[in-house]
Image (cartoon, rainbow, N blue to C red; front, side):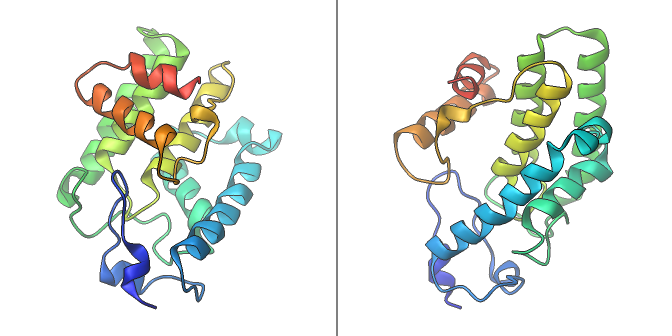
Length: 198
């Protein structure tokens, strides 16, 4: 497979040559990859929102966090559910991933226990910090949105709508999402919360 099909737009994590080697299906285009991943993610989404799983799934468990990524991409990538082993243009250095995840999970437990923020803000803070850590080789945005949806529902809020669009596709909605993430980087979460509910 040609690595050229994995050219990335702004906000997409580049997939390295070693990571491309771990692609499970035989695909020829970026469109085929997107469709394959979408089907894989839909199955994971149905699984995590089934009443039995939703009741016991813990977004603040490192094991469950990785397990959701694995379910989202297990038919696509051999490294699904495994933290990245290469540096990326975004994310903490690989030697800090485990510590950063542990810190995020501790912070989120505190937010839920003490409620310094409304449930939407708790889930969006969780989403944003997980995106900043960027623990996986790819799929971090999709994973962090889905696990934040689970967290919001468990906190008694509805799922987020995330602009009601495919955020993989380039264009206005994706640009608004990237812009809102950049505002959150500067400690202004209002645009990201508003986007998640748009």
